Image 1: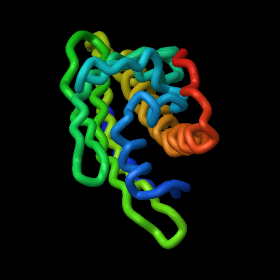
Image 2: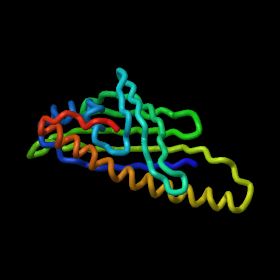
Image 3: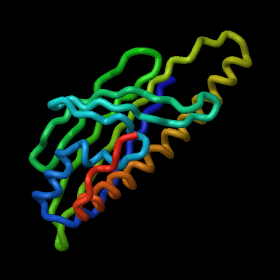
Image 4: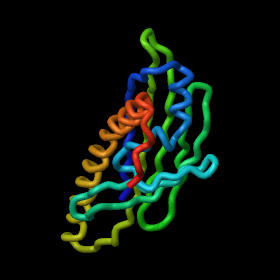
Length: 169
């Protein structure tokens, strides 16, 4: 099963353009309050985490992802790498900051690819289950990615109040 979701959004940032760029480049802070990303860690430019999605019929899935962080002139990019095994996620994104009259704003382009290997089904019942699982997984991942802007906004609000990053689950 392969599911791909793209999401674009814009979030106001209360600080300067330079602060917004620094926030984007600090991926552990930027993603610290995104509730479906767990066990986030950064090793130099390599970002590792679990993408957690609750899929009806399949239960809570913990999908490993590995992305490479690349600084850009106006922020940062995550370049998702293909995983291996029976279930994995590829998470990519492009975060750009721009100045506004009252501070700055952050534009995101998020791209999530989820791969889950299901046992092959030869019979009608198995194929029907596969279609139901695919449809419900697509909806679950769509809902999950809609939560992403809320998590980043919470991280921005926490950073503007000088709070430490939220603990990873």
